[in-house]
Amino acid sequence: MNLEKLFWSRTKTDILKFLVFRRQGVSVRAFETELTWSFPAIKKQVDQLEEAGVIKVDKNNNKRSIYLKEWIDEYIRQIFLYTLRSDLDDYFQTLRKHVDKYYLGDMFGYEFDMDIVIIHEATGKELTPDIKNQVTHIFANYHTDTVKLVFMSLDEFNKRVRLTDKFVLGMMTNAKECEVK
Image (cartoon, rainbow, N blue to C red; front, side):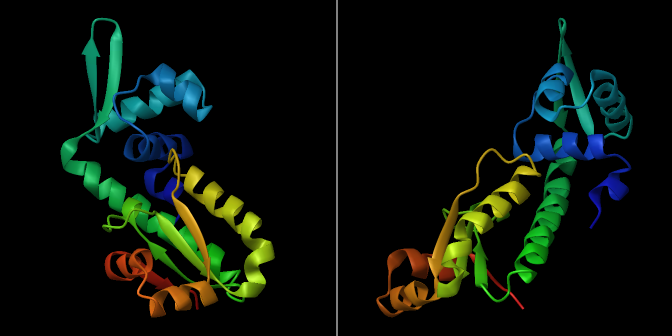
């Protein structure tokens, strides 16, 4: 899904991602620092989002704090999580020889302490740093502070399943399994 087409602006999309995944109650100047867009570009998009009823701007003294409206916060979050998962799926499709499956956890609303666990083939070990960097980059495009990421070989995964490892059983029970096809 092309979020820039959906929201009609890359700046607007970045503002919404920041409010969903990073923090709310920030000023336009804080957006300028964090997002590297110009003040006028951010101000214009903030004004449009406020006119559309998506955000509220609290004006106290000389400070303006920007928040997503409560009624829409979860809907926008779900759109971004959908596109984040699509971006991950697209990336893992290019690695289907090396990545067997992955599990989505905490950030995606599943009761599992990790955000993503990647199960890879033993031959994929040399690719692990590249995969880690790319997955971290994908998450960073959504302005997430950090990503809790675990790599596990398929052999280790199967061994830990046989040994009824608490981490793996919790992952299998509480996280969302995604096959790489």
